Length: 212
Image 1: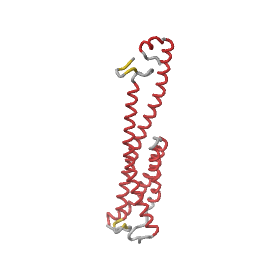
Image 2: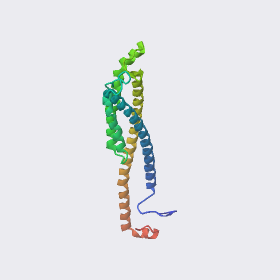
Image 3: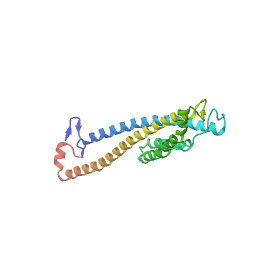
Image 4: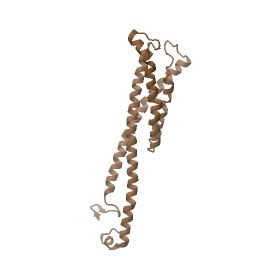
């Protein structure tokens, strides 16, 4: 059947328009979520570089320990938190579901777990500071435990939002993949049935000008 804009291609009934609309919606959502995750990764990179700088200064003794205290134990495993962010970035160009899943799993192991351990490790020092006003580690004259707790809280929020947006992005990619598979399975069957009808009853297609 011909449309107002001209004859419609054989084997199509207009349902491909809805499919294209769904694909466009998933694509726009994917672009938006990628942008949000990238912003969080850049914030995480700043936190990570600051921790690396602090640990380097402490170990190399570039400054006295009265100015830059030695690192807490949780800071060492947290250095691996850069890996989930890199896996996330690697998953973006080709919408690689496997890399994104690995990024989310490793984020729990290398990012969230060290932060939970860090909150427990620093709690006695924070309690001592709160009750007695005594601090034993310093960063440029300020209480190290206070500063590191602020960093820890910021890092927890960054990684929590990363996981949230990554889960939404994963769902979007998975839904889009399933729709593509379903569409690729439906379209050939429609085309095949149309060509079979043309072979059996060719004259209606000739009259309508739709014979291929």
